[in-house]
Length: 82
Image 1 (cartoon, one colour):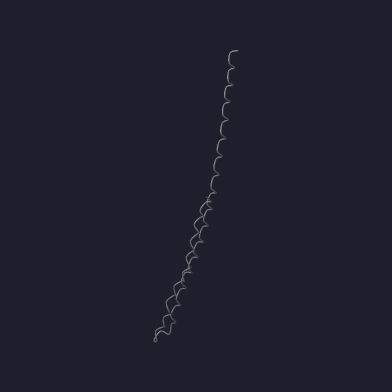
Image 2 (cartoon, rainbow, N blue to C red; image 1 turned 90 degrees about the vertical axis):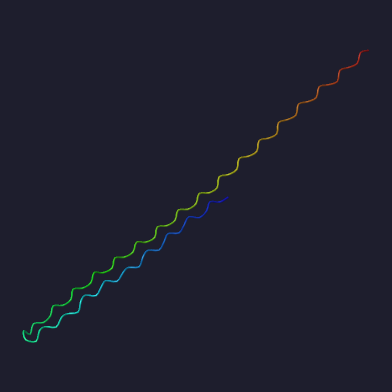
């Protein structure tokens, strides 16, 4: 029989989106300072690609049968007395 086919690799995870930074804060009216800008979120890491399945091994071939032995030849009849 032929070998079974290997398992297919699993698909990688999708990359996650980075989080949004916080909104910039408004400055106080009395001081007139502008708020700091929010920091940018970290970009998501990319998922790993699935590994490829291994291919199955091919089946082994059957052994050949042995040839039959040849039969022994019968003995010749004795000749009668004269």
